[in-house]
Image 1 (tube, protein in one colour):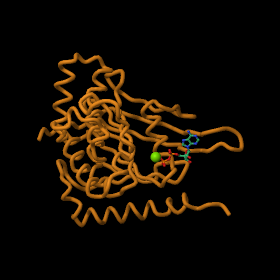
Image 2: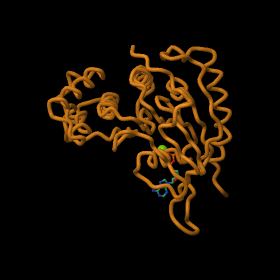
Image 3: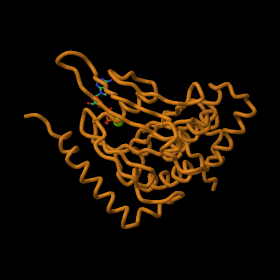
Length: 267
Ligand SMILES: Nc1ncnc2c1ncn2[C@@H]1O[C@H](COP(=O)(O)OP(=O)(O)O)[C@@H](O)[C@H]1O
Ligand SMILES: [Mg+2]
């Protein structure tokens, strides 16, 4: 496996958010959704964010993707390419009217990569995702797990400098989820793509992350950071380690108060 160097905290961050907030609406009906939030991601770092439902996780990701403006503060991305980030959503976001191959080639077509090269790169990703036999199939013929593999292949085919993932495996059953977690783990340890990964699964966060950030209830701020104590390259086998369970319980303790807070409904 191609082992890139471990993220070096002394290099300038790939992504930096300072004093980031977002308010939806105005006046009495205004909803404070996010922040103030500070975040810094080193090149090659895999950052997982967990937090209660409605705390502003998707809002953060949409700001990072340039799909939404912050109300105050800023989010800077230090990248060489004009479209440095690729985003993967929970609901796949693939086009039902395009074949699997055309879906994977989509981002490359937009970047005006020559047809022949785009085809070769798309086929390479098809193979890496075990989808070679489905190149000419339409997404409707695929299972949920396969559709999400197409979405991942499409995002990675453009070789983004930053990968933004919003609960990408949330709609999958537990077994598939484990398989795709392990695949993504192996993949990102090879590519060392700087990744911001939102999940509500603590297990997923510990398996994948160089660090796990815990967000407060809305408006979401970062209230804790933990680094899973597992050297890279690692595999899904760490799930059965004692340190894994210990960290999972510790994170759950941190999260529990916030989940309660978020669930509380005023009388
Ligand atoms: N476009 C919007 N208009 C109004 N409120 C929104 C909008 N998007 C999100 N919100 C609100 O902002 C809060 C955070 O939402 P979101 O970022 O989706 O949370 P999460 O992804 O953590 O579940 C929620 O209370 C949500 O209802
Ligand atoms: Mg969300």
